[in-house]
Amino acid sequence: MSKKFFKENEIMNGSGGFVWWGGRKLAVVRSFEAKITGSFEDIELCGDNATYSMYNGYSGEGTLTLLKIDSEILREIAEAYQSGVMPDISIVSAHQQRGTNKVERIAFLDVTITELMLAKFEKKATTEEEIPFKFGNFEVLETI
Image (tube, rainbow, N blue to C red; front, side):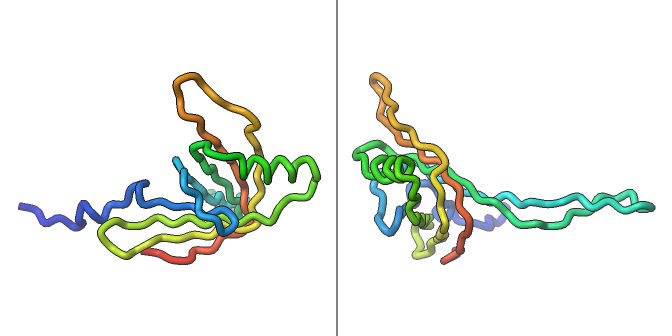
C-alpha cells in the first residue's frame, strides 16, 4: 500500500474564497481570478544559438464575478467613467484552507476597472456582474 502525501481535507476549493473591495467584504462572489504576466525581451547574440530572456517587468489583470444584488460597484465605476476621475481601488482576496487556520491572502493595488457591464440579464437565469480589472502592484499578505 502506498503512503499518501496529502490529506483530502487540505485541498483548497472555492468555497473558502473571499474578496474585499476597498475594505468592504463582498457577500456574493461567484468567482475571482488574478494573475501577473511577465514582460520579457528576447536577447540573441552572434555566435550563440540560444535565445535568452531579459525581464522588463509585469502586468496584472483579473476578473471578479458577482451575483447581482445591488448597484454599488456599477454606481462607483459609472460615476468615475463619466467624471474622468478614477477612484483609488484596492482588492484583497483570501483563500482559506478548510480544516486548518491557514489562509492565502493577496492585496491588489492601483486597480483599474477596464470594462463595465451596464446591463445584462437572461430569462430563468441568475444575473451575474463580471468586473474585469488591471492592477499595478500586488502584495502577498499571507501564505499557507
